[in-house]
Length: 408
Ligand code: SER
Image (cartoon, rainbow, N blue to C red; front, top):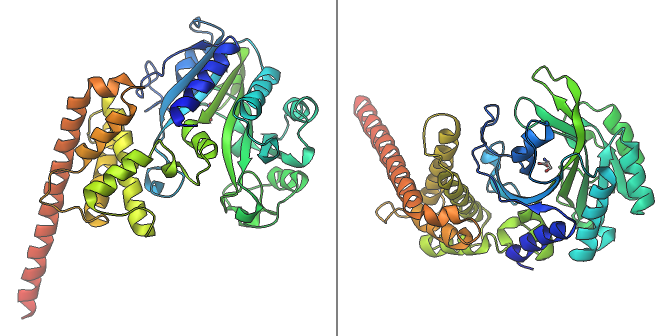
């Protein structure tokens, strides 16, 4: 199933469960000074969850544009992304844990037809209700229900304050052959989690497990947040006016599973962009890890930059502008130094971004509407970067030759 079909299937499924489909909001959060960029589908729901604004319906569904800055320096590996689309269903004081769990399970197993034996779930350490729902209602064997603490199974608030709560995640198992060690039992992981110092790495883990960071056996697919609390800037919790549901499933990750590929860059969301980068730079994808990393960085950052500019971000030296500048400079640097894009050719990134707009413009019309502006901003920034880079290299060469003369 291609990603457009998947996105549509998700939204239509939740419409059939009486949810109102709402458009993605901008990557620039409105009315929330504590948040730099929209990091999750629930960002536009915050005023509803807090009881400040009446929602258009108590059940909502969306495919939300999201941007997370924490991972920029890791982009180029097989799984991290800055920009991604998050599929979500939301209940504003309507249904709670039971329906949220049932809907997610029905979508994955009946609609998508995933093998239920490959789905493992996690719950918050103290969440007996969620544990019992998975075990008794959904009939997941207890060997595949794990309990974790706040790091993995408590979500929010996004920004300095806001709604938050315990969560339950569904993980997909790519198979034992990808595991780092034999699997640890839920009981071993519970004991480890209860006494765990999160500052430590995972070296002391009692075995592989759904949240293992040491291998690629599991991928977190869907996060169901039971949004019951408000956390203030002093980190104090108080109950929200009503319990809410916020769920999020990354379209890129679910496309990996649906399309039977190994990583997000092999899905139809990235293949055309990767192909463009290869054509323009004369490189081949899949033959050399270092080259692949460069190709991924150029593709990923071009995609992220196009969406940021379409929503009104321009390169600058602070906040969102700096995030965009960093993306464009990192992509330019890799295109020249790793992919050997010739300095005298016309700027690369506008050509890559053009293919991004061709691909996503029909789903996100703001890309198409702002095409000329997006391309002009990117071209200008790429040229400025090369000028700075060339000036820096030239200055270093001059200094080196002066130093040489002093030696002679
Ligand atoms: N807000 C949660 C997340 O981002 C669920 O959507 O994971």
